Structure formats: structure tokens, C-alpha cells
Image (cartoon, rainbow, N blue to C red; front, side, top):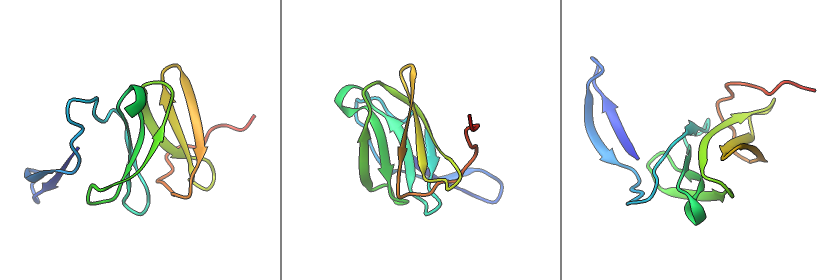
Length: 108
């Protein structure tokens, strides 16, 4: 996972590694909490799940999922439900984090 600074013209400057997944499967989907935390899907098998990083790249938490994860997003009215796409399923988990809510699932 890289952090990239942009100059006023949009050119990349000062790239730096925030987290190295090594030879494992790196980030597929990513979103952000309103406090700057990075929430990303990565890995497979025992290392497959949702990784939560602080703004400077320090790993803060890991949420395992039973299938290879591909995407993640915050939703619901309070923006604290994390929706995770993994394999052929959609998982959801209530969190204490609040994300930038881009969508709210329809009510049945």
C-alpha cells in the first residue's frame, strides 16, 4: 500500500510504502473512515479479510472473512456498518468506526 503526495499540478511526489503485503495478495477494495483510517480488503485463506490501518499506515485491526475479499464500503443511516464483498457473498458488520457513507441499502 503506497501513500502518494500530489503537487499543485497533480504530479506524484514522495511515494512511500505504508504497508507491504509481501508476496501475499494485496489490496483489492478500499474505503476510508471519517477519521482518516484506511479500511481495505486483501489477502486470501487465513490472511483474507478486512485490514484497518491508521492514516500513517500502522495496522490497527484485522477482520477475517471465510472467502477471498474483493470490496468494502460503509453504509446504513449512521455510516457505521461495514459491507464486505467476499466470494459470492455480501457480509455486514456493525463497527465503532464511521465511514464516508456513499450508499444506503434499500429497505425491504
